[in-house]
Image (cartoon, rainbow, N blue to C red):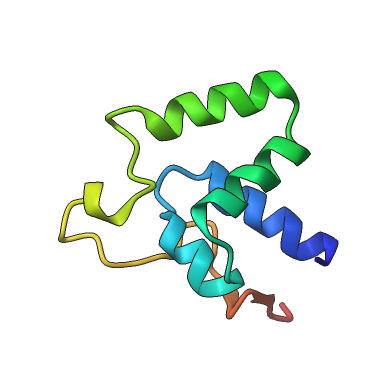
Length: 89
């Protein structure tokens, strides 16, 4: 896995609004594979905080927990990224 892909996966996993299904659509990683990646790349305390947040009742990391009106995968910070390739500015 390229470093840029790994960094983008971590960023997407860290964002509360980006569901695991979006990561799977772009990178082909299941939720369990994302968890393994986060465990490997984050400090133990950061990983525990992330897992606690993802498993909380307020997390929207799973599509079935989201409001049906939310149908996008893009975050507000992802303006120029398409198909996970950063476009020239």
